[in-house]
Length: 269
Image (cartoon, rainbow, N blue to C red; front, top):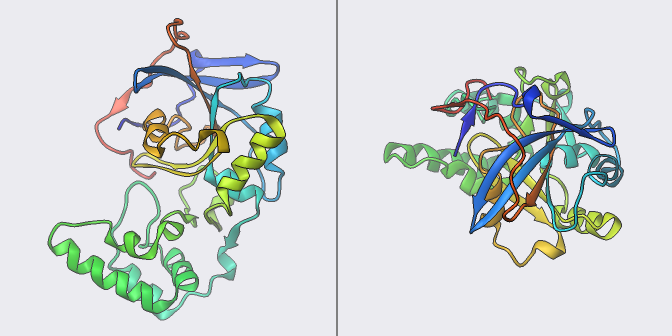
């Protein structure tokens, strides 16, 4: 795992082809292969856009047969309009109380945000949230963490938003849910555009592969996670939700200026 502070889009790593801007993110060696990553810059993808057309616009001009494209789950969910607005979440007693005891996470918004916890209650029901909170509190005494999300599920862990420190104002007042049927999303893109792709939930802590194209089903998810374990899409205002991963074999890698690593996850992400 590698951590970085701020925007990853160094001008020295900037490239352009056919009007598309991308940034070289360096080489990663996985299972004997040499994979170069290119983070593709887009416009801010709004709610209801067609993800196939977005991929066609930004990825097709750069894509080589055999490349793998990772796609941010947040962008796919925005295209699906799979969001909840903060004004539609009615804050209740239990969310106000339980959020006070939730772990504060410097790397993003967790269940210490009352509106996010209320949304979890709305989705999963109060009994399960109470049970998960109780189990989490007990397990923390013995040094075990992450129990809350193990019980409530990845769909709750994947809620992203209600984050006043986000570089994008849109995310201050909406929560983005996990994309619907991410395997089908990848299947549609492969069938329509011939592009092998993954829907991923990647941040400065972990990588989750949520969906993948039919042609990528023969590889374990851990292989794909290792390709982007340093989160080359970035966690700031890069606007690089797509990363093209290319096996370059024995070919020389593109010139790349490394971004300075830090010793811990960045504060406020």
